[in-house]
Length: 76
Image (tube, rainbow, N blue to C red; front, side, top):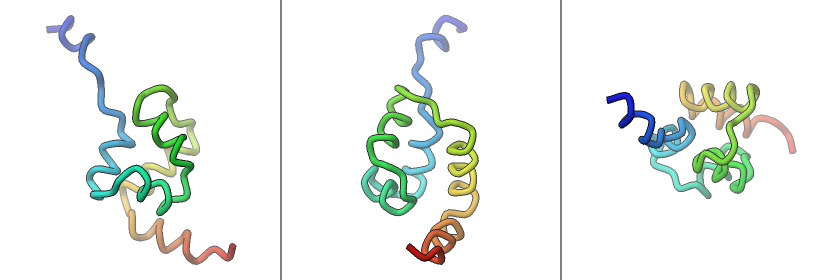
């Protein structure tokens, strides 16, 4: 029912992406250079990712290896 849907907590997309990749929060954060505290806030629904972060998460979801290669190609 509509009342049931309102009571249900939605799983944040960030958590779905991370779990699909089989990574812990720490591994995902390190791999994609996201502060682990920020990732936790997103996953626990305390904060919504802003537009650039949502675009980055879509890129990770669509091509996780490509994003990782791109990050590794950038000189530190």
